[in-house]
Image (cartoon, rainbow, N blue to C red; front, side):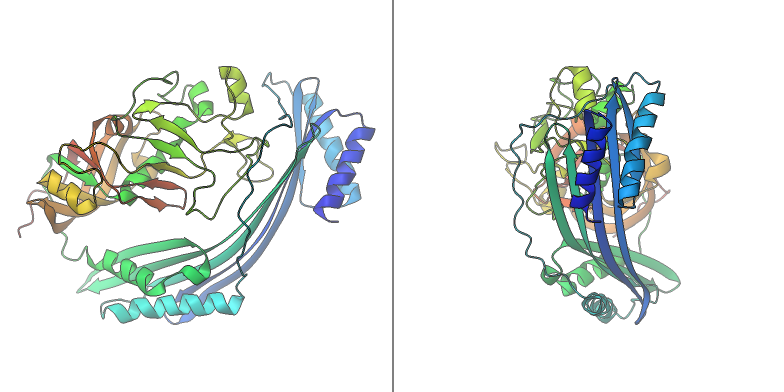
Length: 460
């Protein structure tokens, strides 16, 4: 049974059972991936997924049920289970369905040509060969990964909504392992988008360069440093603390941003954007997990917290409109909140203290003078607390010497607080980049950052 046929069957059953308020949420997708180790295929996977969730509201209480089996019999069971679950609920949670009336964007026509498994394998093998060819120190353990996937989202409800989004993208990942004597160093690069647009030589080069740049890394003494966080490092921090911008977390007392709308929470040049149809992100959406039309919004604008991210429930509690950020990690999940493409906007406008409107990383290093250029942080699971904002993270990067990138350093710990970091940013770059495809930032300069390191500073 197709989704359309199943939807019509469920609607008829709900009507027969006199269920006035209901919603059907559906996802389907498929993906093909290949991973190369040495000069062989390490793994090859083809996956398909499909699922549907029925939600109904009975006497003000919501009941859920889900299935992966699209048959007439299962449709009847699905509706019955959700109805019974609603009757057994004791929670006083707000249950809402979105009303028809929004204007929805139209996604660009999907012109992707689905690659064959052979094409993916050939591309992954080519990336692997490129990494090995770039440097004689590239060692076994180097791996290349290539994947292509398609996903469809659909939502209909008793208020007249009937929506569909479909996305597709290729993913590419190169991990270069480099040997220098007995020491091993790794480097990474990944891309998302259209397979035919991937520059494999460039991706391989960036992965190998990332690995070799750390060769001979020394230590730094503990102390307070001027730090330039690279674009991807700052994007990683933003991803780690993205939940503090959720109204759900704020209403649960798990975000220090609760009640801070309209207040300054960051430097006056900091604007944080959530854009569901960001041009360079292939994962674009026109509606959220409750059918609310999505739109681009400045969550923080000029350092002022403009809005938290809302779904229907949190918006009703706050007396505001939903921001269109309801999310369902899977078809069977309850509704939560998450951003789409969430990034710190590169600085533009009036000149800053160094006389520049926008800055490349080199210019930020020049402004720093002396300090540390942090290019990677790890230990986020244990070393970052999204509630308090505190972090203490193992890091690596480079010394900043005479305003330039100097010797590589590693095994030092950077400590601070995310909320303080936003307020204390002094400069911001123009080199916007993303991690995980959805969290982005340019490089940023912050002074007086606590660093715990070794005993001696590496010499030039």
